[in-house]
Length: 231
Ligand SMILES: Nc1ncnc2c1ncn2[C@@H]1O[C@H](COP(=O)(O)OP(=O)(O)O)[C@@H](O)[C@H]1O
Ligand SMILES: [Mg+2]
Image (tube, rainbow, N blue to C red; front, side, top):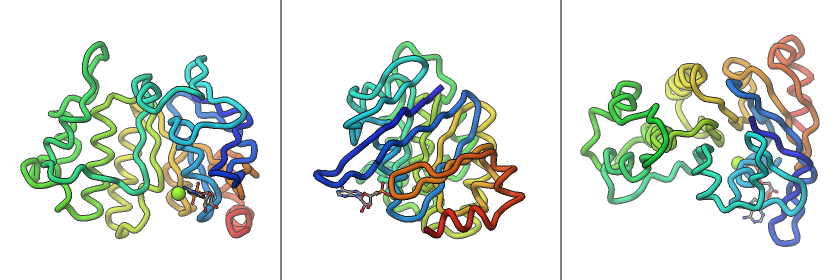
């Protein structure tokens, strides 16, 4: 469904992605693991066209999307939940969702009623200002906001960062539920979360993929994974 082929990306002179290749098949939950600064966020930004690849290409459903602006990438069916989980200030929870709703041709898989079923906590707070929610609730809202855009592929950038263990568990359950209908590429530093919720994993180090394997294989050799992530 999604393929990155030898993607290079720069911030100014700084060569941050140095030939990233990876693949996500329809229906999979894939995790991109790497320590801070390894290039996880930049990889997702390169897919979205926010940091356009200088070399290589991004292919989504047999169509080359590298070079397209972010709004076009989004309209083709890729939803992005950035790590800073920016809730729109001054808008209520309901308004945050309404402004992101997909319009027009797409069949609606995520009408607001279904979102509120999945996130009862958001339903209870639908008239409250979005920026008053707790960190975990804001993360749920930004995920819900990506879903109402009707993505076929969801990119989640460190969805658990800075959140309490109980919220991490909720996000894990949510990922498992979404996995039934949505393909997911998520980034993580937390090995346990990746092992529990992803089917395959890639390890990125200094802008290069250094390992990829089914998570089952990581599970049997966790020390190897720890080593890859500590470099
Ligand atoms: N806006 C930016 N300008 C310059 N360098 C950046 C910028 N954003 C990230 N970097 C650098 O690019 C590298 C990869 O960053 P990033 O993709 O954010 O890593 P990760 O998400 O894995 O923590 C890091 O060395 C980081 O310092
Ligand atoms: Mg990051």
